[in-house]
Length: 349
Ligand SMILES: [Zn+2]
Image 1 (cartoon, helix red, strand yellow):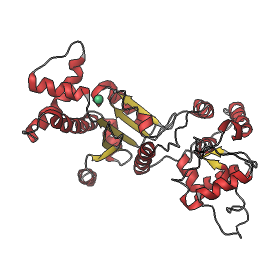
Image 2 (cartoon, protein in one colour):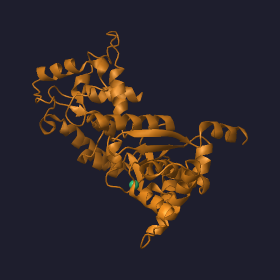
Image 3 (cartoon, rainbow, N blue to C red):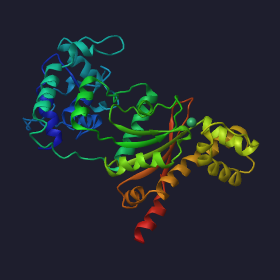
Image 4 (spheres, rainbow, N blue to C red):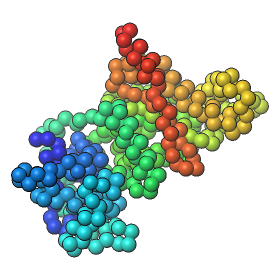
């Protein structure tokens, strides 16, 4: 059975006046379809009335909402958000002035509880269907869409509820991407990509450098979790990069173990000063931060045969990105190595 039909089978059973969320249905399908994919499945519901089993008049698509208790306008433009709200109101569901309903009151929790108990009782008795892993490009699109949702304030993928916790405890993790990011508290990775529990494999270290321990963590994600995408996420106004620039320009020294991190950033600063000799101050820090993203990407590719094999065989993409602390926007800088270089490497194999 197509996974879309499995979505319809779940949705068909939602009783009148009750709701499920895209994310919960995704959980019920063991994440074989993302929350976004559940939205796509419902959008694909046939309007053809001759398809008696699965058409929009027979599957109550309107009883599926986003995890904040609202109607997802981004995903359901073709399904008419106003119509969805009025259909739910006709079933006695009350929305507040912000267009949100009371999740505690209307969530179809009995079904979820039964499924958790069933999964716990039979976990060792059957093999779950194969998880359809996203391609590197699909994973990248999901993160781009996630940052857009974060910026718009309409987060609908932030699955951190108890059902999600139980499901991931039983079924393990299947993150969509590895993110190597800075420890800076202003860059909370799951939040800025609008991803929930078990959806990102995050490695955080000041200056998003890629030394041995960081690389070993990334290798684990690539080799054992089969994650198709690695994002190296730098950010504006990075204290670690600032310190490395200060050290290069003024010869200042940091105490304790901090020089270990500085030594990883120093080559990026030196390369930036060579290529942009007139840059100073904030401009030099910003250019160095971007160079440092590529330095980390280069480190993970150069120092790991696991990562190298995965990238050159096309199983994994490494993508650089920068987050602007003020706007929250993430600028995707492209792939590493650049696709043209990757192609020539693949064709000479
Ligand atoms: Zn930083």
